[in-house]
Length: 350
Image (cartoon, rainbow, N blue to C red):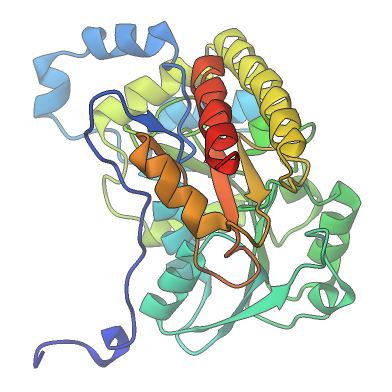
């Protein structure tokens, strides 16, 4: 195509999990929360007026950032930036802190969007493999890039890297360390205190998982004010719309509701993992709202994926190194997970 930029010639673009509209579908492929968001988010929507829609939104999302700062335990809103989902902030961190041609590091396996974003930005992504237990190795601590993407807990394995190892990485890495905490609410600890302790640490959060707001697109990043100021130079003028600001504010202020739903998902996760192990899958201990289930060579992950699909159950199968014989399964409701296990048991029985 004669109008194509050279930088796009070898970029395929990110492939999100499919969103089919099929009646009765059990959808366990995109790590959405199986439960609705806080009822207070609906109240916030109803409270919006036509005037709220007529005017431009607050360009810096101040009220929302103030609430996030309180919730995250950081000194103030100057430590927080809000965005149109975490994906926008991941793109923004490259625009803000990385020059084209620079080296960016990431663990492997990890969130595949990092590779697309670095390609679009014209910089080089260098993967460093996690060990067999999905933990950091000595090679991670000697990396010399401009920026390091670290997903904690890891996706797609669900495994959490110990805080002490993340501390060591922040202390040893010469550039920015982005700690992607998309799934951290389903884990036992977090790294929100790191920006106060390490000048190069940026901790990112999404409202798509624990808050059940994947359709709204709300994300945040926590960092030292001097880094947030750099973000403010490069973000879009009104990057978080008025509806998202209002709904995000209502969601983060209803902590009790979120904790209740997270507890339900964690309990279901443990029951589902036990059932998968009993069926013969190898399943790393997950700290997220999904499980990575390694299959036996026969019949293999691709076969199970297709068989489940025929039964109106969709999970995620990645044709990628180290995870090509595994299924990533979102933790759904108890009823959805029981249906999944029953289907797998039937398929494996032949």
